[in-house]
Length: 327
Image (tube, rainbow, N blue to C red; front, side, top):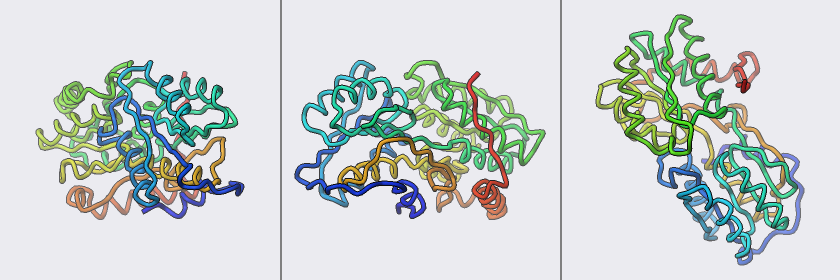
């Protein structure tokens, strides 16, 4: 269900203009590396687009890139073919969005996880460190060894935000907790290497970690499988991944990319879409931790009470989570 608080934030200051007839409205989405079925970031975006199609009956065009050169090419093609709005999923598409948006000023663009400052571009970002803080708390609460791990995908500031929040949350519970950290790589290939993810997880388990959090896209599938195989715990990322290994996934750092995509399409159709920046955190229900039938056996009621209190304190401002600042 779309959160009423998030809807309110996304609708703030939007000015009413003429409604676009459904027959003339042509939305499109371009996924990042890893593809729409990565069971993580891209798939969450796909869920939002599919919900829009189901609710409105309006189809959307979509494209899964396989190399960097395709970004600009496909966006230009979509614009030329009359797309009303193009949603670009992922920070790596920022330069392509900027170039194509300048060429087609009449087309609306929404980019996720980046900022492009143009009058026809909407930039949606998230406070990932807030949900990661809660996941770090969960990891420290569940750990029996006092050692937990983090595995990121591409080594970039966005993923460092996840790591920073995770470490702060773990140390908030246990100041003496040891947190192992690894990044999968420095190129976009880091998002799609489950084998490497499993290897890194096994290495951290071998050093004593008993809970490992991934922020690595499809690479994280290997992390979670390794935890399942070892009889230990993992923490999912971006979408709710608890269902992938019930009883082994402690929780997931949920990032509501699905809501962002859905609202971008809906607002463009309704004529209420607006350019500029939106930043969504716990207060706006843009991020959260997951709790459902798949992880209730491992995320205990006592743990949940601690997480919910911290969540409320972050929303109220009583508890501050650090912002990552690139060196």
